[in-house]
Image (cartoon, rainbow, N blue to C red; front, top):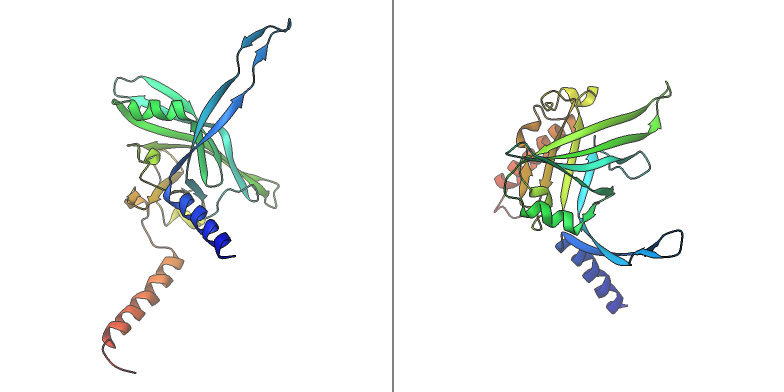
Amino acid sequence: MKRIILLLTFSFTQALLFSQWLEYKNIPPIYNNKGVMIRPPSIDTLIHLNRIFVVDGTIPDSEFGVIGGNTIFILEYDDSKRDTIDFYVRPGDIKMYLSDYEYIMKQENIETIYMQFEYWGLCYNKKGKSEFYDYEIPLKNRVIFSEHAYYMIIYIYNTDKKENKKHYVSLPGKTYNYQLIYPQGEVRIGVQKKWTKKQKDCWKYTDYHRKKSKSTSGISK
């Protein structure tokens, strides 16, 4: 029993410590209509990044909503050239071809990387409508690909919603904004303009108890 617990603990620790892992995908051969092989079998290598999307406080997990559509990274260079790289999303994971990942990391003149994806809400309101959002997130650096960020939470705030409008600023010309939170720091600290009620309540009582514990420190009970 102890051995099983140790193995499970080690596996969980591995998942936390390693921000990336590789998947090897067998590609079968392709034959033409005469039975002649026109492409030999091969192996594609994909890289997985531990990245968690949170849209308006909910993780898209096929119950309330999903991320999909044309999921691409748009690379914009300082000479106005543009490239596009496909990626795939599932809860807690961004997957892309290792060759594409290595290509991005080797480029020295990338000015901006745009992460483009769609969100489809699976819940309908009384009017029979569901949510749909089309995002293009500007990333000024390659932190989203960093091997040192062993996890990253990508928060998306739709500022056209009443509950978000007074708390978050919008990207220029957009009705949404974002934050990247990871162990070494965060990107776009100035997204929030006003605390939510939950944040206020949290810090109100946290500060109170911190002050109380300091004032009574050293006093025996």
